[in-house]
Structure formats: structure tokens, C-alpha cells
Length: 169
Image (cartoon, rainbow, N blue to C red; front, side, top):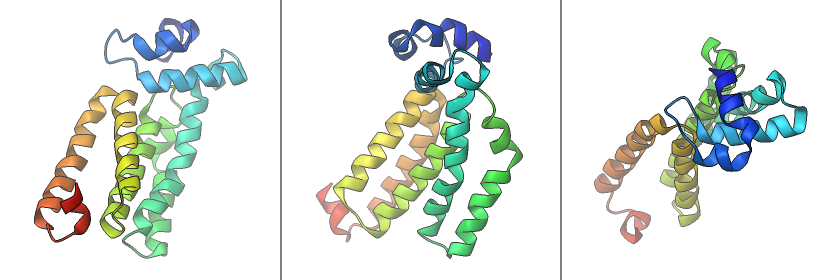
């Protein structure tokens, strides 16, 4: 599976990686990151897996930041540690696939939604759009995750019409 992505997409450059999809095996945005990784470290396993390692390492602090918005910092620290030591997270951080980036993106989306709730602004809303689009471009099935966040946000917005930000949107 990983080698197929490397030979079918990554070795052909960023244009092919960004535009060709022969099915659900290509995590499109990940293949672009993998192309950068192979340019930096060579066309080998490490170069292909470098983005997964990066997003896996980034997931724990992003989870801490996301949980810190609503819970005590010790709980947020525990959430970050649990994610960092999770067997699934460790496994995904070793695969040349977009799963670790999905974990990191979902944690970022969660934090952004909580930040939007606490301090509404158009800037945060734009970041939510960017992260959501990135998640969908990363892996098409992530549209289900983004739809869940969007539905929760819309329901919250409808229930809280008194919030100035909701009225502006």
C-alpha cells in the first residue's frame, strides 16, 4: 500500500500527487507532504514516512491545546499523553499514510471550534474552513468528520442566537 503510493504518485512529482486519484488509496495531501519528505531525505522509507512522524509528534501538543480550552491543564496534559502513547497513534505515526495527519487535524478542529465558542471571530472561522478543507483534501473519507463538526456547530449556533458572531454569519 505504501509502496504503491510512492511509485504511483510521489515519484512523479507534486502535480501528479495533487491531481491524480485512482481510488481511495491515495491520501492526496499526504502524498504532497511525502513528496517534500522524499526531496528532503531521499526516496526511501524515512522520506515517505517523515510527514506521518511529524504529524504524529504534533498531535499530542495540539490535543493538549484543544482540551485546554474547556478543561484543567492537568486533564489536557493527560489527553496529550494518552494520544502520544496510544497504540493507534504510534502505529499511524509509522505508516506512510495520512492517518496521523487526520488525528492532528481533528484535534486542531476541536480546539478551533472551542476557541470559536469562547472568542468568536472571523479569523478563527477562516482557520476552521482551512483545516476542514485540508482534512478533506488529505483523505476523502474525512468529509464525514468535517460534516459532524459542521452539524454540531450549526446546532450550537441555532441554539445560541443571542451570540453576536452567529448573527453576523
